[in-house]
Image (cartoon, helix red, strand yellow):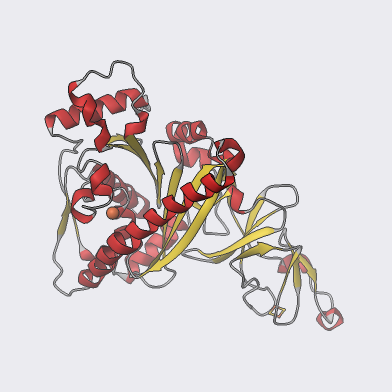
Amino acid sequence: MTAAPRGDRIRRALDHLRNDTTEEFDSVVPFGPEQYRDPGIAQRERDLVFGRVPSIVAHATELPKPGDFLTLQMPRNKVIVVRQKDGSVKSFVNLCRHRGALLEEQEKGRCRLFSCGYHRWSYDTDGSLRAITRDNTFGEIDRAQFGLIELPTEERHGLIWMVDDAGAEIDVASWLGPEVDDILAGYRLQDLLAVRSEGFDEPANWKLMQDAFTDNYHIQYAHPNTAGKHVHTNVQVVEDFGRHARMLSPRKKIDRWLEEDPGDRDLGRYVIDGHFLLPNSTLLRQPDDHFELLTFRPHPTDPGRCRMEMRLLVPSLEASGMTKEKWDEVWDKNWKILLAVLHQEDFPLLRAAQTGLVSANAGGMVLGRNEVVNQIFHRELRKLLA
Ligand code: FES
Ligand SMILES: [Fe+2]
């Protein structure tokens, strides 16, 4: 499918609002509780999804200078991501090749080399083994065999992507496909700044979480006094690009154009453009062209846990034309609202759902015809796991 201009998609949304309709697939899709609790399924997801396809781990501005690093728990590996001297980004398994100590304990920082706290072996930021203490006792070992294990990593569209398997290859452009690659290129996310980011270790399966952040059907019910006041419920214009999808949701302020003909007026400020990027990200473009990036990663062993990360990507102070005080105030306020909705509304609901999903007689469930992006997510996961 080719990507439709935003004006056309907004007009489709207005038609849906006038007719009280939304986009729908032909049928409902049944699914079972084992999806959220079965250790075998969880292991296959880690290996066949995260071990094979690229997922987003950071925004480039989180690692601006050579030696800047961050550490994270991927589904299959504990990882260090580090900016290289030549400006590229590499990732390594966060483990000392001597006796397996955790090499870097900090969540983020800047360093010239990684130095192990156990017996002080050290590694260059390019992963090569630099020094062995008391090295005469090790004799003639081949140092090239004991560098850090590298994981395929690529920076594209200002985002850092990784495949969580040392033997895999990475090609983000071909994973995205031409339509979505073009869409992301158009946003120039590399010019934005990750002004806030935070991670949440939640007691819920990663799919339960991911599903809540493409879903426009729950808005007025789960968020009646927050998002539900501003965004329409159960009206989404979806483009299905195969793996990935784009979904436009109208804000309530668009309603004045239901009667009045908008002509060729740009109604971009009345919509939120969401993007589901298989396997585990939702990217939301807000009306003033800042973005929220949400990622969801399975826990390395427990199907009932996951890590969610949220990032706020915004124009820099210089590009914004705002004063420093104003700029700080705007993003601070924005971030606090996002956190409040997560902590008070989405997280309690999703944690509780996970506790119910382990019930012995949980029974079968169903995705509606209106839950188009959720259907796309589950359809594409099934393909990756097949
Ligand atoms: S385990 Fe790292 S130096 Fe020994
Ligand atoms: Fe929600």
